[in-house]
Amino acid sequence: MTPTKTNTQNAELTDFERGRIIGRWEAGQKTRQIANAIGRTQTQVQRAIKAYKEKGQTTVLSRSGRPKSLTERNTRNLKRIVIRNRFAPIREITNTLNETIDNTICDRTVRNYLHGEGYYSRVALRKPFVSEVNRKKRFVWCRERKNWNVSDWNNIIWSDESKFNLYHSDGRQRVWRMPKEKYDVDCLLPTFKHGGGGVMVWGCFVNSQPGPLVIIEGKITGRKYRELLENYLLPFMDELGTGLNIFQDDNAPVHTAKVVLKWKEENLISSLP
Image (cartoon, rainbow, N blue to C red; front, side, top):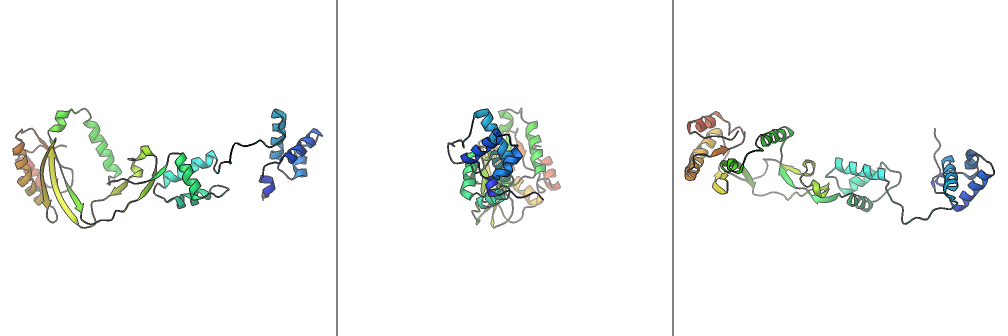
């Protein structure tokens, strides 16, 4: 087993000890002999001799201020801990860091180091949950249309359903992030389309012109969605009068039901793929 170093061996050399080391070295003693004689490590002795040979140093150099609590390596480790645990409270981050370093530091010190690296605790932004598969599909969809001009986009009728919760908790959750990471995926708090009482509505718009906003009663089905389009989308398209509009809805099961696709075909509704 490797012997444990004593506090004396870990402490910095005093001026008196440096003088003893230099004197014994000039008298011809080996570094190991010197180390054993004064109760220090051989490495400390070698460093003291090197400082004397190269700089003539025989005393402890004065410091400009209080020594840092964390080394550069410890600071890099702290950043890795935060990146892996974006939503962890400062107490948990401090405990995790203290398990990896020799000394023990407090929450305030850890917070100050994080601020120095640009990380602050901020309320996480909420966004609808998007799976990795759908994220890739959306990226491909956007890339295929990157050369569209304004007129191409202005003729699309955008539509969707949305649920507005009547009662919900604020549920604010804080996240450690840098200012530029505000919209990074791992710094956002995903939301899901379920839970809690609320009102479901359907709406659409084209360019800067809003269309009808419809309250949906009960569960929406393919047949119910077809009736909604017939009662509200067709009149809106007739009101536009251009005949060049393309209708957009997503790939939700009710939007791709056979009765809906058949109705679109019969009414010559062009859909955005």
